[in-house]
Amino acid sequence: MRRNSCDWLRARHLTPVSVLRWFFGDRVNPHRAIMGYFVNQYAKDDSLYPKDPKKRAMVDQKLYFDIGTLYQRFLNYFVSINLMPIAWKGMKPDAEALEKLEEAVGFLNSYLEGQGWVAGEDISIADYAIAVTMSNIEVREQAD
Image (cartoon, rainbow, N blue to C red; front, side, top):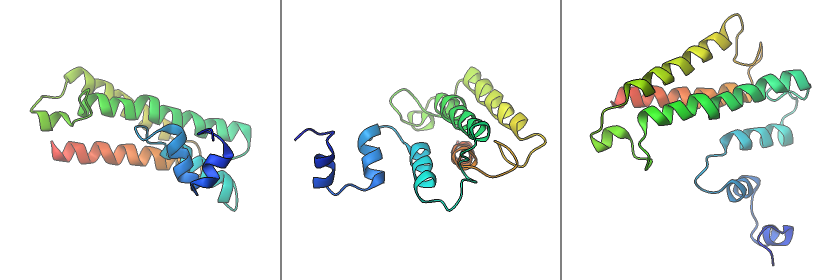
């Protein structure tokens, strides 16, 4: 039986979350994909992840900003290459990495100017994803 076959998945009684974890692998945190899946599958409306192409593009853009810029710069500043927090290894954070992280937070602040949420006037899954990243930044700052 092939690993990616539907029979293989049914035989293991995998839930949607474990299927996503299997698909993306254990090393990648697919919470953005899981949020999109759950909202598409179970939400009573599309307010968190709009079906309108223009609104959805704004949410997607902010999700990509989170994983590709904000979270990546968080990792670059607080985490070493082997995924150990820099402080645990007795290393000093890089000043250039801090500037890049501050620049990303500045981009986030500009997204919020004149609107209530990162992708518009309504809360979306992008707000939840970015809230997790910003919480990680805050916790790491307090720990260091």
